[in-house]
Length: 217
Image 1 (tube, rainbow, N blue to C red):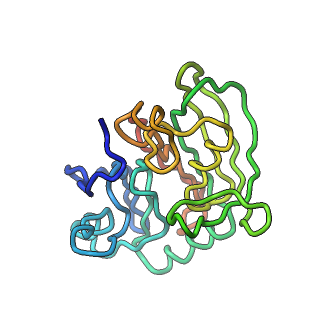
Image 2 (cartoon, rainbow, N blue to C red):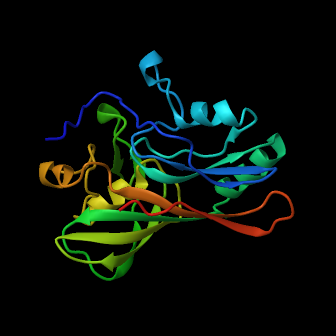
């Protein structure tokens, strides 16, 4: 039986580089590894620390949740960091995630539900139509059954957006320690959410480039 409060024990293994040039570094972050260090020495091991061990000039551009795997992009110069950061800010990037969710989900649709932190239960987020920030996710079923695989395209980048939006449909992401009920949580040995593709304009010339991390499930 999995424990929702199991101690931090990130996976070991070499850095999985999916793209590298003079301005950009894209890696495949494993599930269970923090993007940046947490509070306390026991949470010091993280992706950016591992990246810096091999690429000292790497600069943070965005983050993934600890339990989400997939493409995470770093800039290799301050100029590239500003360029890519602006694309994220203006929602000019294109992100595609894959998830396995509880129950039968067919078709496609759009979820437009504003989100805000649930302060008494941080870091959980919740839907709030009065004070929430806009959050939009397009979804499409790729395989439907007792557990369904969906492709998710977030238009915004709110914390836990995909996890809360799928929960709002009644189909929590399998293995989610925050939002899944016991059946859906125990149905997988990890959070079944993967950042599959990320497309941006290259900071050197503006050409469209796409990075992919192999689907792990």
